[in-house]
Length: 415
Length: 201
Image 1: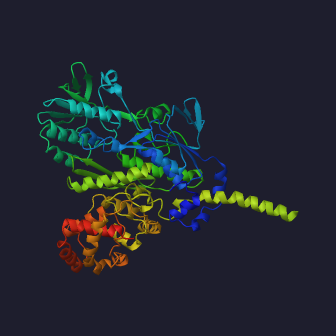
Image 2: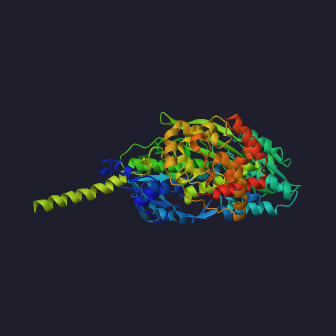
Image 3: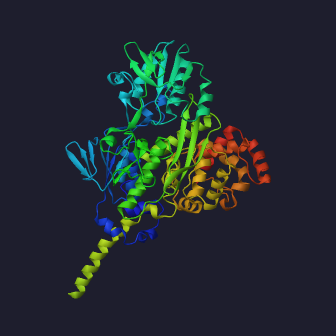
């Protein structure tokens, strides 16, 4: 699909010319009004939204703001720690989006001015008629004493990229007989099953490569947050893994290589992976898009428009209030649904009520995976879960399905 | 003069109207299109899945699509992924979703099958023609799926679970037949058959 005209696109997508009259004259007034959309954040949500707006209505001007030149997939990045996957295979460029005729600017949005409907980028301003904010998460460094000063060496590796590679190196260079400590932040945080998949990958690596070593998981929550039974079964394969619930880490001392939990327990480490508490990314907080908790953004369940500011739609991990996990698949779904909403609203039509879906795989060793799948519906303009289904256990087939899933969804986001 | 003015007004109006009409309509206006947006994460935009274990829905017979969704929802076809999503499709509107995918143009597979595997598969496929017809087109209206051009990984997995009796056919006689037939096939035979059918147009 290279530089398609609208007509070619409609033909290629199998939608006949018959529908061209379907919109009626209602679109005319809206046509003369603005049709500029700015998307902040080129992750799973933002890239999808930007692409789908152009796919659904190529007459709308779309600018995607993303400071990074490369997209690195968080899903599968835990497998880089164990050496099962390479960071290279998780890294993609934004070139695929060019064929949709949207502008990708590799710059960060500095500020949002909701009243003036514009976004500041450096000294420049980008005006919008609708803004989609998909900012992801930031860390609450101040929630762990001593962390702010130590954040260059104490890694989270919770945004895939250089930190993932560095943490893998720290793990690989740890002596056999060493102690790897990782922490799980209190809910809500990005990717609920992610820390437990990571625990499995680290434990698998240690069991295979450094059999005298140990892993301690300090979980701020009372129990495993997601796929609980499946992870408990998976942990049984790892006698080198010690799981401690209700062990929120409150302090780190990099000098004595020690963390302290809320219970006052002190735990020594050779390598630490501290995943801090999280909130919506700074730009959302600064633009007053977060709620009273100052952490997450509340949105309309059909349009993803902010409950606080008109014409601003928020998607992905920074949202709260929907019965969905903060997952890549959900962000991708929100990207498409918000794109459909924006396309409709810009032409004076009602946004279609579309529910998201969630497919989430976790690898528990080098070849087997488990999964959870959630289906939803819209009821009285709210997202409601229809069903949650877990795989009966771990399997190679589920792992194979996860590889098909990633090739499909990466293509849906960037291809 | 009056005529040319009228003509000018007419053409101006036309020029103003048509882009507006084009802008107001779009791919989402097809019934079922917006409901199918969620499916594209795995099945690709318009149902042209790029994943090897995910079936292509573009151009699928509505009758077979609806049967598959109902079977998934009732647990007759085991799939942790599709059981919830089939309930989504039932909730969102099965007829419209089925019609949407049926209207989409099926793109050729990106992965070309190994030609030796295809040759071996073609020889084995003689045993499948009773139900799936000589060219693999089946009879979707009667519940026999069209196997042509589906990803090899998907076809092989379905044959494997049919062979292991994890997926049953509703008709007892047919179920018995498929068990007897598939028992003869080794996992290499199954891979060859999958390669053969995935290469058919």
